[in-house]
Image (cartoon, rainbow, N blue to C red; front, top):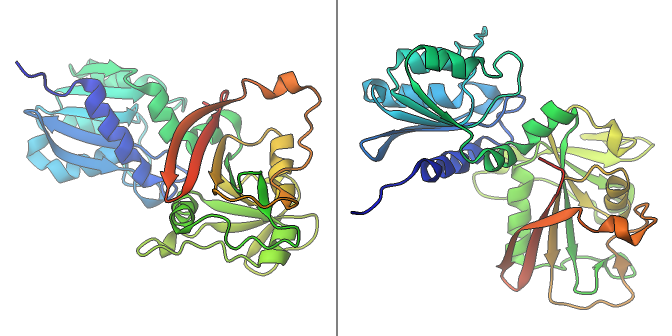
Length: 324
């Protein structure tokens, strides 16, 4: 007999769906929810812009009466607190007649933290939790980092030649990587609330830092400049990596000084390394001094989570071992 999808399979779908909410759901977590009945998905939802509606509310509204008797797969424990912006999702799930709920991660917010699960169980609903919790937390990394560490989740992007250069000696860098790699970079911009460069990159490249992908133009991130001076109109000046406190996610895109500053401050959670199959020789290196005093300290800090070809360029994605 052929086996149907297991709880982990359905949860993986809900986790993938949750990524649609980044970064627009901030300051709320980007949650995904699917409703499954008789072996098929009858409704789906993800946290909407500004944090409302929540994923569960969106899915239940789409399902209507079909939700009765279904299994809900939710990437974060349904909230247990009502607010002026909407009712508690745990109450909505009970009222909808959901028969079973599978939860990836427990909500660390003290207003919910276990209370949502308890409320669902008290209503006679079967609750299964801790299904792919690490994957769910990774998908919610910006919100999770903000909530647990009180700082933004930082992605550092480096586009280099094979010999580790980000530009020729004269500063010219257009283009080291090809079209597909640059398109992927625009997708990354669209998934972050803010983007940052240093003063040297601003003056040399005069970057727009917008999202130039059809349909995603409205998701261009806020522009930050790492400087102790002033920033141009439309930019926000930040004096140090530690000074950024009003966004959940930021993409550091250039140049070597900014990249080194964030690494030295131990503020990088994720690395995007785009490498083109070219050699420059005598060019500008990707990094300067990052404060490393013992080579042993450089080991065990990063784990490879993705590797792919983008045209002729190679993308390697690393996450900090202690991030989540």
